[in-house]
Length: 163
Image 1 (tube, one colour):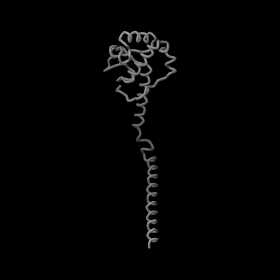
Image 2 (cartoon, one colour):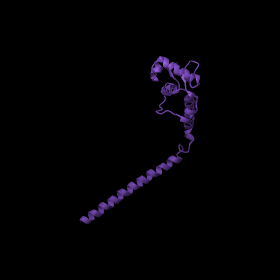
Image 3 (cartoon, one colour):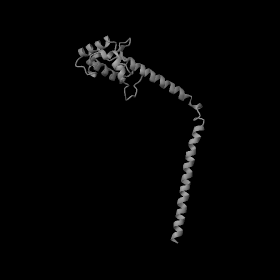
Image 4 (cartoon, one colour):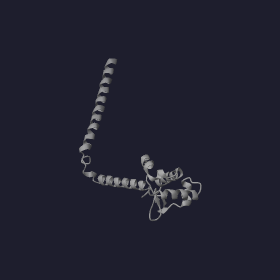
């Protein structure tokens, strides 16, 4: 999946509080939240990867704000023990929720594309709805014509009064 342009991140506080992450230390919860933010901007939404490979611990610990790689690994181990993140067969850490949400967005986009590809059979494409929009243009033209007539008559009256 190419990079999306979502400027926001879906976050469900009740899910967070009822999920296994809530049983982890605040430091581990903070790490997971930072990992979600990194995964949000990843090439494949919800996955901690670069060019199809796992982001190395040595890079990820800095991006997530850990003091050192050991702290990162200890907190990640806590999260893994609690079953918070998932891993692909290639070892890429990902958020199940983010991956599922992206799959649903992709599916919805596919349905919209399919629907729009059949747009030529809609009433709007047959001119039924578009023909109605021309009526407002006709009204605008009539109003403009009336305005021109009114000012022409007004000018004529003003000229007669000067004489």
